[in-house]
Image 1 (tube, one colour):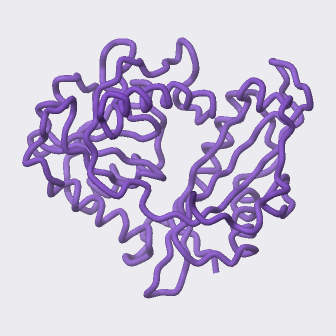
Image 2 (cartoon, helix red, strand yellow):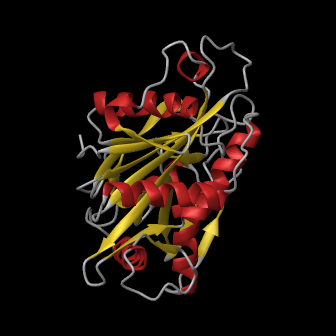
Length: 304
């Protein structure tokens, strides 16, 4: 596992890592009553600065997830950002980080419909690249959850059991990762990451109505692609066989950043290597996130 920080944050209080505990009979543990955010911070060696990436947007999405699951949030997104920055500083972290902020129903021996009390926990963990290679993926037999069952746009821990099953199946079948389809057979996303393909020089990604998480990184890449790289981006439904015909494909997310995919169901994409569009997007995204380019969009929060 990544290096463990000395301190976590629980309900606004700095707590030693080993002392941050939740009862095994809490509603969160028993019924998966947890929503969360995964966030990133990047160290810039040239500026000797750690920058949190779109922290406010992540906290606002957390607030939306809490509202959708009847968890009351009595603090602002800015307050949550301040707590996270305080945690990072308390640990004196000066390297690339993955942060997790989660809200959960913390009732001891809670009931299925319990909605209080709410606890909020935060962790900031040193982490470099989540994926260190290009991926070979397979289309899963498991179908992505839909609005008919559980809201995909809510970042809930329970939703990730669907992703876990798809990932376990993919690995058992000899793939690095998986792609999930919607109930209607359209491409949705990977197990915890949004998806883009390149066809005919255009960047294509499933719309928010195809059972995807409304990803912050996804939104960032759409804006970078159109505003900075001059690419055409289409948000539309994607058929499974379009994956096989794509010139390029990649996953994106806070953990996965921009991760190339070189084959789908053992169909080699393009040259079988990282494509130009994927490479340019990844380089542009990381340059912005690290503070190596001017922060024209106000996405970065200096920690120190």
